[in-house]
Image 1 (spheres, rainbow, N blue to C red):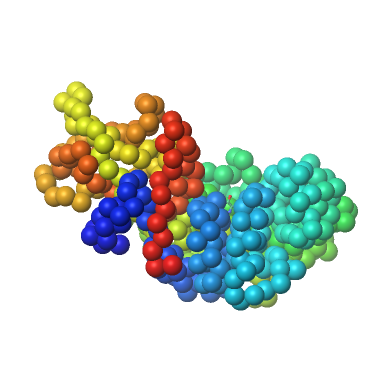
Image 2 (cartoon, helix red, strand yellow):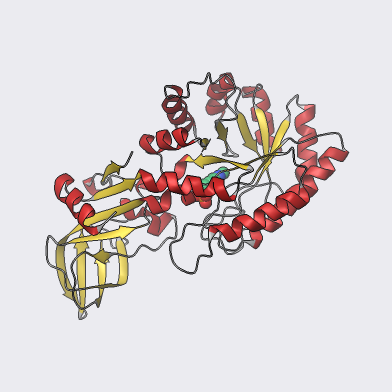
Length: 377
Ligand SMILES: *Cc1c(COP(=O)(O)O)cnc(C)c1O
């Protein structure tokens, strides 16, 4: 999006506004498929659950990773009525349910769809056996998350040493482990995590096969990094490593899928906000904008992701602080941003804000989430 287009949209729709460019989403998806041709992409809906995004990615050929019953229904309802019309009596090729911990009511509601669901422990297995006996299983492995922006390995995944016992326990419960899965941590810029995870999965798969349990699907999870800054090495380099390990470690007939979230949507959105107040505190200019960390900038807190604000106007940059609109001191967008001197009603913007941003927006302090504007749908 050009600066002029963004300003026009902000004028027409008011601020705060988040502009989502679907051309970028299609490009990111095409890039993923081009560099990982053997891997079907299941978009992780939690990164940005806008139905418009689900429909665009479905049309492009994507499948979906959901982690709650509402997300499952959101995808199910949005892809059901879209061409290509498919009867969803086999759901796995379009949706995986990748949250290893599920409330019993969710399992009961999911069972009729014969879903593919993740587990990583015996208590969860018992629940699935009781409440969703028609589900297929994916076993989530614990793998190194070293250096990823968001770590997940302390919360999810069985130790590799327990994996084959859990596969056998599933078989005894009348269930079948169809898939092994892992997640290397979100915004994984340490590509070795993927290499190690693939090797762990291959070892588990070999041992399972030797004990009579053939696993047919490998799910290599999410974590593919968005190019937030120039330190992030290119996706093509990561894909080369992954492809080489896959070719070396697994039989060619193995079905492989991935759950990219951030990679597909982060670069597709730009937030535009307006300066609504200004002050000088301890000799530092302070600006207050009509968005906040409780809203579009929630990723600063939940996603450990720093967003930089830029001005449309030119001028000598000076170090300043930028705060959100709420009354909370935590609502600090940056203590050291570089902006020219701003006036009330001037616009600022932040790019690459499509993942884990509006997705976790709240209504705190009475301020509604920013309006979403979709372009190039
Ligand atoms: C969040 C999540 C994803 C998406 O992760 P990204 O880092 O955004 O690619 C994929 N799979 C699971 C199970 C997740 O929890």
